[in-house]
Image (cartoon, rainbow over all chains, first blue to last red; front, side, top):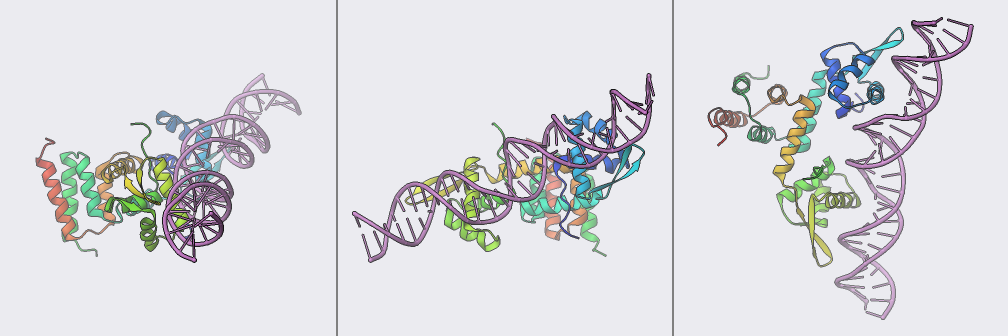
Length: 128
Length: 128
DNA sequence: AGGTATAGATTACAGGTGTAAATGATGGAG
DNA sequence: CTCCATCATTTACACCTGTAATCTATACCT
């Protein structure tokens, strides 16, 4: 693996759509993104091209248009963003990070219980 | 509050030192950063100047040199980085975020118990 | 078949960031 | 008093990102 693929914030909005549904045409992507983002269609096409150059997505020709597919998976992306955030901001101190999040973000009881289950599992369950 | 102060990754390394100890002179900062980062002294001075311009730090003259003080606090920084990360990567879904972190990062039993205590407190304790 | 709309490709441009060199100012050594 | 070392300031430059406009090729309508 050479230089890891860096996906910018705007580009990630395109990726999020492709992780939900694959493949999508440029016009589908444009249509959906314009519902939430105030971007011109040209802007979105720029992101598609940059993602192609970075090899974060690929396309297949389908007549006059392209069908876009993700190459980077959502899990790869989340893993790498998590790692870089944790190291950049907290120097890897995950305890501190979680503490800060819990301090400032309000969780629903559902979420709290889900996390408690995860923590329990982690405490018992070894790595194998 | 106008445009929020954005601290870049490199700049944050300077801030981290100032959050540990305040004030510091440029040469102290340079000396400490060069232990871990492969940066020239000029590079570090650039970061100091950019932080000054952003008003993330301030200085007081002390003879021929400056004493630097943080203006942005560590807590402000962490809060804003947390929020932007959570929104940028997880669209605000903190449950999903925590789950992903727990999935991939191994926590010590200590950390797990600390988190469990925090979650307990959060479940009972309201906001007041 | 020719013209037009449209999809994709190329080019643009300013601001931020990493990385530093060049310049300017000044306190201290001689 | 003058020159140098050293600190701070200014300038430099390439790459990334956000944000498009412009150019090119071509499928379709008439």
